Length: 342
Image: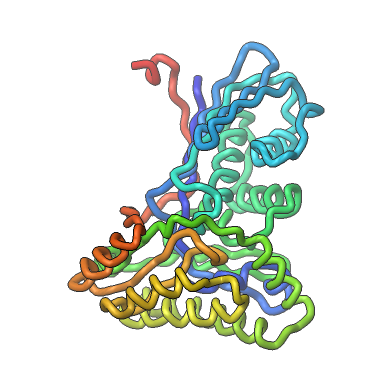
C-alpha cells in the first residue's frame, strides 16, 4: 500500500504581515486568502527494513536515514527530518517522494504546503487522530520554531483548510472562517486575476526579521501600517461577500501600497516597473505575493484589458501562471502498488 497526500498552495489577498509574531499577540492579526490548483505532493511507501529513504524531485536529492540519531538539520530535506523527529519514527522504514509545483521563495506558501503534506502522510501512515487545527499548528511549530524558518502563521492554516478563508490570529488562538462566496462572484474574480512569475525568488527572512524587531520596539510607522493591513483584510472580506469586485481590486492596490511601508526591500525598481506598467495598461490593483522582494505578482484587471497586461509582461520575460481556485485543503489517500504500475 502506498500513502499519498497533497496540500494546495495559496494566494494571500490582504492582511499579510499581520500574522507575523509578535503582532498577533499584541493587536490581533487577520488575513484573507484562497488556495489554488498548485500543490505540494508526498508519496509514502512502507519498506520491509528500517531504512528511511527520501527523494526530493525538485532538488534532485536522495537521502537515506537509519534512525533519528542520523537526522541533522543542514538545509537538506529539513522539513522531512523535523516531521520524522516529531512522530518519533524508529524501526520503521519507508520510501518517501516529495515534490511541489512552485519552489521556495515563490510567495505562494510552498514550504508550508510541503510541511502540511508531509505531516498528512505520516498522520495517515501512523493513524494519528489529529484534527485540521492540530495539523496546521504542528506544521507551524515545525517550520517556525523547530527549524527557525522566518514567517507568519497563515500559510499552514490556508493549506490545511483550503478554499477562501478569513483567518484571525490572536494571542492564544487561530480561527479559520470559511467564506461563502457566490459562484458567479468566484468566476468573475478568476477571470479578472492574473498571476505572473517574475523569475526572481524572494529571500524574505531579513524582511521579516526587521518587521518583527520593529513591532517589538513599537515603531509607529510599522504598527500603523499593520493596523491598516488588518482592516483591509476585513474590508476585502466584505467586498467579496457582497460581490463588489471593483472595491476588491482597489483594496488590493491599497494593500500593496501599505505593505511597502513595512520595509524598503519589499519592493524594488524591477517590481515597481512591472506594477506601474500593469496600471498603465488598465489594471485596478495588484501586489507581490508573500513577504516581498520577488516571487509571483498578482494583478487584478477587467477581462477586456487583461490581454494588454499579458502582452507587456511577456515582453519583459514574466511568465503567466494558469491556475484555478482550490476548494479543498490537505487530502490523503491510499493506492495499491498494482494500481500505480497499471
